Length: 209
Length: 226
Image: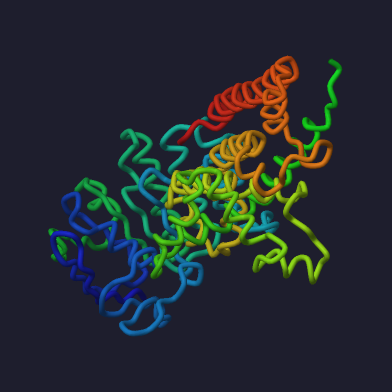
């Protein structure tokens, strides 16, 4: 279970967050610049809160006054906005970047099958479409078997058909993996279709919906 | 004609060795300075960049002070390793190193800054060590900028004159680099020899810059950004 209770001073307001999340999918909604990505960054360890505590399954990620847990040790799968695929690696190299030689497990084969990316493994990011990039980035975030999955606007660049397919794949993966998933979206329909819960953030203040 | 071609070989040797050390020094400095904020950082950076704005004679004077037989570094090198820097080609290497370091440092710093921090962060979330991230993400993606810096540093090293003359002196066959050969041929009224070396050094510079431009164009086509 993820427990987040912290605050972080941003340029124009303070981000104040307090929630717990079991093995559910939670949608983060709210206007641009309201602190949604900062919330994901605080959980991932890219940004540190000013005070409070973040823990996952009893492991303390951050607690005030102590050295935060290193990003590398948090076991977080993070899909960045625009996917941030490594441009000099093929899709396959992107996906297996963290694996170093352990590429043949049935779990990995199944993941690639679920995401339907067998055909594009040899291609570079600039040679594939937005939907394919999204699936490659999702596979990359999942291969290290994370304890939590953070998705920053994963569906924003996708057309309706691809979005539907990706929704379906995400639900399938969540069903299989049973880990907490937080995804940022501006679309009400994404939240309604995928999320067990929704959290709206406005100028750093949260309101559960 | 024909001329002794040793200035050409010596210039290449001096520029290559100094570029080799400048490469590693810049990588370490740019990585260190880019990732940290500490007291005195801007002072240290100013010190690295200082040779860009100082007259070469000041750099030469400083090097003679440091590496002269009675200088703080020169006496140690002489006593411990039997190494003499002043009036040797090693002095030319050190002069080249000092004047090319700021160019290479700036290129490396700019190249590192151009690498999207999300690539490094996403690798961190995957549990990958900082060294492996540097080796496989940061360095390859900043390579075009670093390589451009290397070419410029090499060319700068090849053309170094003022500080080299002061610390290495003009000893034909031993410390005579191309710029020194041009100057002393001109001084002696041997315009033909001076022109010969001018053509050589200009051609090398032009070839290096043209090749660099071609290579940059080619490498940007190879991996289009996402």
